[in-house]
Each structure stands twice: as structure tokens, then as C-alpha cells.
Image (cartoon, rainbow, N blue to C red; front, side, top):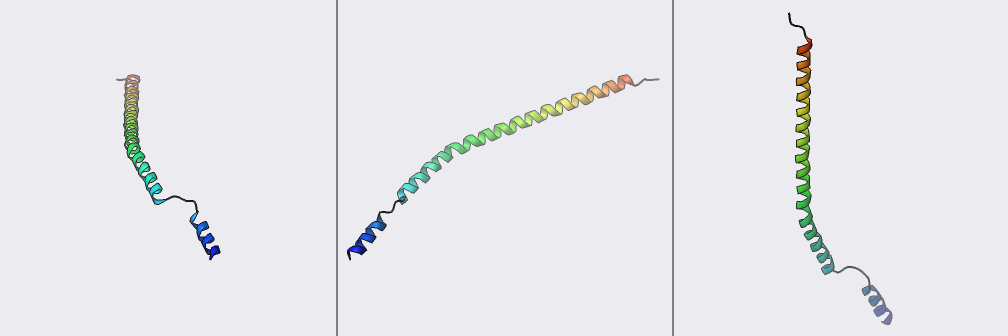
Length: 80
């Protein structure tokens, strides 16, 4: 009988997390996620806007280059 009690006591001394501890950790992670997600989405939107601005600038430069080429070609072509 004593051996059985000792075995049960040893088993009950197992180390681990309780359900309350796990729930507390999950709540903390949820709060951190609720704070972080909007910030990250804001940065993503700013990056997209910046990309669109850079693409518009690139298109503008290409248009200016083509206009300059066209003018140079018109000036170089002799008219009779």
C-alpha cells in the first residue's frame, strides 16, 4: 500500500503548465497581436503607396525620354 501511495505522489509531482497559465499566455499573445496587426497593415499600405509613386515617376521619365527622342528625330529629319 505504501508503495502505491509513493507512486501516486511521484506522478502528481510532474512539472507542467496549468490550464490557467496557458489561457493567460494566450490572452497576452492575443493582445499583442491586436496591437501589432494594425501597425503592420499601416506599413504595408504605406509601402504600396510608395511603390505606386515610384512607378508613376518611372512612367513619367519614360514619356519624357520618348518625347525627347521624337523631337530629336523630327529635327534630324530634313524637310524638302
